[in-house]
Amino acid sequence: MDSPLDRKTFVVGLFVAVLTILVGLYIFSTQKTTASTPAPRTVPHEPPLASSPFIKDIKTDAEALVSLEKGPAVVLLHTPWCGHCRNMMPAFVEAASQGSEVKWARIDGNIAPSLVKRPDIRGFPTVFGIDSNGVVTQMNGARDVQSLLNFAKSQVKEAVASETVNEEKE
Image 1 (cartoon, rainbow, N blue to C red):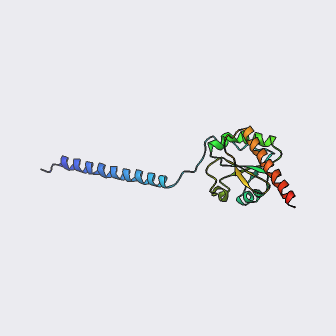
Image 2 (tube, rainbow, N blue to C red):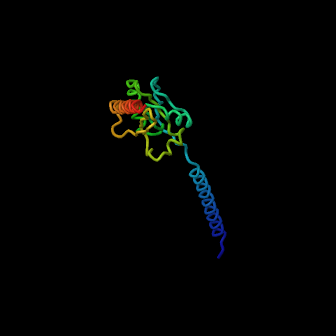
């Protein structure tokens, strides 16, 4: 009943089964550790941020909060990984080079967490204006050069109007 061939077939089959289980466990354990470690978020072809002498690049969270108290200004809240931000950046740089009545600033949302947590910030890019009284107005609508310039002018008008009201009260 027990022939040497049957024993040999059984031992080889058992060996193959154990080997298959061990290889499966190894593959499962490597996939599990790889999946539990998040991959760094990178954009494969991220263009460098266009520098401009007309735009202040805010580098820290504290600097962002201090600079927002002064106006009139137009501020772009962006992130390097956002495609919409990258598409809008040339228009923002172009508008900043033409709009000298206001300050222009860019804030990377990755370095300004207290600003990003504001309830009125819902996505990137967010453009907002600050008048001389520190009143913040978010820009809605198109994000082309002319729209940005019109928005900047509206911040200057609001600043001029608030200054004349303050002068009349005195």
